[in-house]
Length: 85
Image (cartoon, rainbow, N blue to C red; front, top):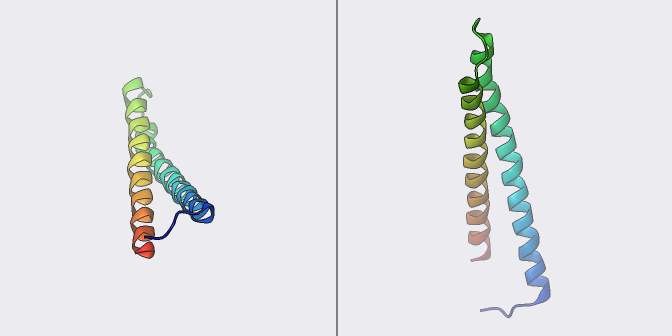
C-alpha cells in the first residue's frame, strides 16, 4: 500500500470533481431531452395544459437527470478504480 501524500489526495480530489462534473453535464443533457420529449405531445394536443401533465413532464426530466448522472458517475468511478489497480 502506497503512503498517503498531499499530492495523492489532491489527485483523487481532482478526479472526483471531474467525475461529478461529467455526471452533472450528462444528467442535464438527458433532462433536457426527456423534458422536450415529454412536453411536445402535451403541448401539441388541442386541450388545455393542465397541472397533471406538466407535473409528469417535470418528473420525467428529473428522473432522467438523476438516473443518467448516477450512471455516469459510477462508470467514471469504476473506470478510475481499474486504472489505479
